[in-house]
Image 1: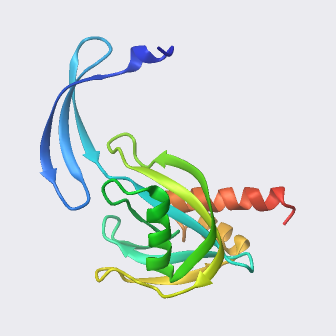
Image 2: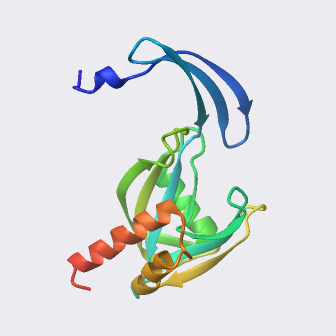
Length: 185
């Protein structure tokens, strides 16, 4: 037991309110650490991947696409959801090729993090891909996006002026900038 076990909520029951193609919404009854009960609305998600694809000339591939939830065009690192039981690296390779038309020779897992732990269990796995080779873009039939080649300086400026407002992309760009500083670039 860790010192924080006294903070854990015990799930008493769970009711599925909605089950869709991407998410399941549940209402869970939990027992709080003080013995009282509370309701928690929880979005269940299969997980996702995102890729920081770095070109030979030290640019990154970003995609510009419309996202309905914020009702806005967003500039993001290539990303997508895991299929049930799918290995995250397999998913990352598929998403990079589908969205950008590139394959990578080298892959490195950077980190995994929860996107919105206050209400969702989505865990996103972040990869760096290098040794890129252009193959063929294979967008899903309901997917429309533009691929952008962006320098480190331009990516940082896009964050500072609000053109990049996607959390996973901000995190990966700042990771990249830190790595570049370590390398003296």
